[in-house]
Image (cartoon, rainbow, N blue to C red; front, side, top):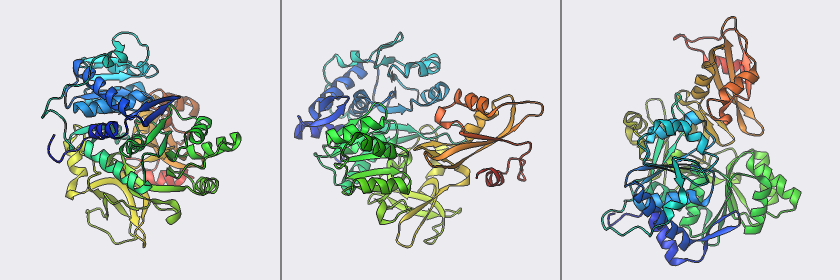
Amino acid sequence: MGLRDLTWFDVLRRNAQERPDDTALIFEGRRIAHRDMAERAERLAAGLARAGLARGDRVALVSQNRPEFLDVLNAAARLGAVLVPVNWRLGAEEVAAIVADVAPAIVIADGESVPLLAPAQAAQAGVKGWFALDAAAEPYRPFADLLEGGPMPDEPGDEPGSDDPLVIIHTAAVEGKPRGAVLTHANLIAHNLQLAAAWQLGPDDVALGVLPLFHVSGLGLALALAQAGGTSVIMRRFDAAEAARLVAEERGSVMCEFAPILGQILDAAEAASSPLGSLKAVWGLDSPETIARFEGACPNASFWSGYGQSETSGYVSFSKHRERPGTAGRPTPLARLAILDEDDRPVPPGTVGEIAVRGPLVFQGYWNLPEETAWTFRGGWHHTGDLGRFDEAGYLVYAGRSPAKELIKTGGENVYPAEVERALRAHPAIAEAVVFGVPDPRWGEAVRAVCMPKLGTEVTAEDLIAFVGERIARYKRPKSIVFVGTMPLIGSGVPDRAAIKAEHGG
């Protein structure tokens, strides 16, 4: 650690010193103080070191939200190791691909996720230890064993620095393969400070954690509250009635969400007469109708709109929705945004181009993908693959994905068409498939597939959807399928995606 370094574990140390008895975390009625968070991280770091985890090693974690999730992150920060949170909603083969990508020294899973790791377990002989948060059979050992020893010994010169990796978050699969975005201590701390400044967070603030902690937004909110010395209430899994109750009982002040979460909380609060008046800010993606309903029910609160991605540690543009409805806010203080044309030259305001970002929020690069990283960082900018424009007042207007990286956003999750298409084409009856997003009142977008069966074969939409759900995460399955006899082609002999979407995207 250098003179000017500040790591995530330094934040925990500060909270333990300045507000040791204040509540840091609430989970299913259990309250954990800031002092206890730091002490658990010290003991867990020592236990992980005994199990073979060293500085720079990866620890893969497949778990629903629970205190141990943050314990592992905090311990990794103390050791200089790297947390790889894995989406527990993925299929077993997808999980195995992520585990193989990062070659972890340690793998930790909750009871529900242990079966997901069976293919990874068979393929990863280099893992030094498999640990279960709940009861599990060999080769898993109890996670509690890692907490039995004393704290980490202080060894000057061996602590991580600000620019060391802390988290690898795998993004949605481009061309069928997920990429690990490497975020550093400095990346996450910069994002925390931005959010704390925008929302004026302090020790009295309470965040309701309804999003999964494997998601950059869910994790970012929890870390921002810790940075501000506040409290996070985390839910194992989202439940609208429980969320409304927790806001009322714990005086929740801030929250991040993706449709349809906010609408369901409003419904539950009305049904149970649970007050939501303590909320002051909600950030996310939702319909204008739900946003208006929220701000009507909570007149002292604001809904915030923004733009960001895992590669930018969270949001890089952010503003109150009511300031400029339909936009993704203004560039944040720690991000410089540009709109570039196909030759990477800036375009005039009002012109659509690729959103590019500079600043301390930009990730370190894609794990083990130097060529992709160099291309993404060409010209000294992070090229997001997203399209947008600046309006006359300087607000960012999101305009979709670039043709090379078309993306479907369904309920806050990213789905790349190429991954779904690959799963569809694996079916013996399917000759070709084209996948795209269509508007959906509940989820924002839904996955639609246009499929061309092979001659002489038959398959139903229901069977095909079930087939896909067995190979990739269930939220990536098509919600609707259109069968066609032929597909229009472009000059290279591949399906004309634009024409197919124009005909079947209504």
